[in-house]
Length: 402
Image 1 (cartoon, rainbow, N blue to C red):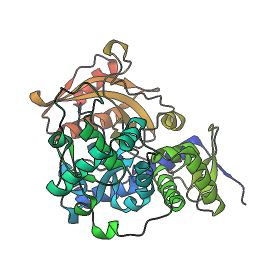
Image 2: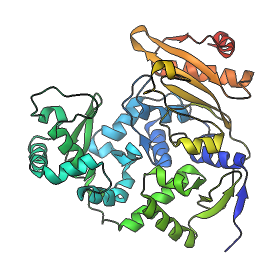
Image 3: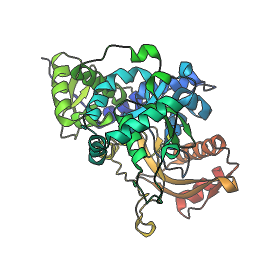
């Protein structure tokens, strides 16, 4: 067994940025194949309901490719079955995933059907309310793609947050168990249908993989997407269970498919697919969704970039440090600032409520890059105006560039 490689934190950062699709030349015109290739590289795109700026799943492609037609992603995810390249499932939370990963997640569906690996309340519902589950499945089989609202038989008004109807619980159980999948969305509402009416037949007909093999392949996909990663990083990418991950990780190291690496200042051993070969420099600037796979693991983000990041959506306004919907600003090889943004669609403007810089601040080149990304974002969202509400000195320097 060869000596474990050691790399600097800057080299680790470059490996991560490159693996996540940064530092590449942007296409002159972004086509659907570029979006498809990017999602296949990332392996998973998280979906979130917050629409303060734009739904989160649209942002990773914009951050890496620039302006593109959102319909390119929508057709891949929810278009005609023959044109699809993505499907929805529990990857890293609710996610869009490349179709090729569907066989790698069948074991998770089987576990969910047994009440394992899903929320306790949902597992209990599946055990106790099979009559409702069967009724909902029969309705979908007979009527086609349906949402929870069309199946709801509850008379009383729904309460806040997760006060789901029985039919909604049944749909979510069926979805977790792979008995139904998302056919399309109506607004942001999922419409569910049978997998055989949504996904390619040849995909569904593939032989099922054993759990251990599927998990090994998911870990390798995680390693490809992360560049360099600890066991916790690899496990979190597709939310594998700790016991499963440790076993599979040892197997992959034993076969040489993952290489142990020591990273400067990291307490835990990290892993790469091959001998680490970081680029000499990564040049990129981008505004990142709070749910972007580069930053969604907050502890990793701090370990990799020295950037402590927390989402403050659910923090009372007077207790927020940075703002309601704050996007990290990536410039070259560091997370250089935080920008609190909002789409004010009725007024046709992109509102910049705050710009907070990280030490040592933004030089003229970084500030110009931020201004450019804000203008691109406003144009992409079809918001003619940018309104800068921040009173900081950095904002004063930014204002004439906008």
